[in-house]
Amino acid sequence: MAIQWPNRILKRADSTPGGNVLLRLAEAPGRVTEMRQLIIDGQKPVVAFSGELVEELGLQAARHHGLRQLSGEVAAFIVESELGAVRSSGSRKIFDDPVYTSATPFKLPDQARDAPAPERMATELLVRHLTDDRLAELARVISQEQARRANPTAAA
View (cartoon, rainbow, N blue to C red):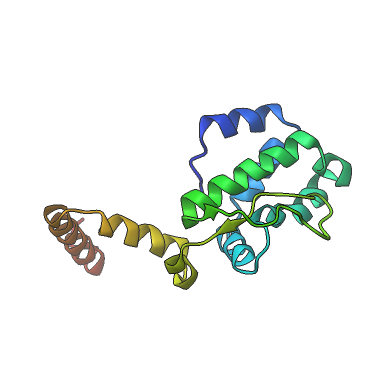
């Protein structure tokens, strides 16, 4: 999954030891789904990075203060932008994690708990905010694309 990182995160990743490794791990397939499940289970989404950071960088490097701060910023960006999660006022404490001791808790909107994938949520969000004219135009474009895919040799 390619994430369009904000410049502030890209700059911090470049200047933080292990920062670019963190961004690569954050874009791993299934990461958003894993973070969604962590939120549902009442855990902090940042812990999704722990094991792999330790594996790739070693425990001491994974515990680097700047990298832990960047991890929180990256996790927040992912769950807020991909899942629509909101910061919660729950406990910040993390128990039994080799890297993190505290982090921002998140909650999912009710509809996000039932959504099977972040892609579906993004589509539903887009469609909900379209005017009737734009929705009709989108339907026309989708219909044309479906016809093209059904008969790929006709377009050649």
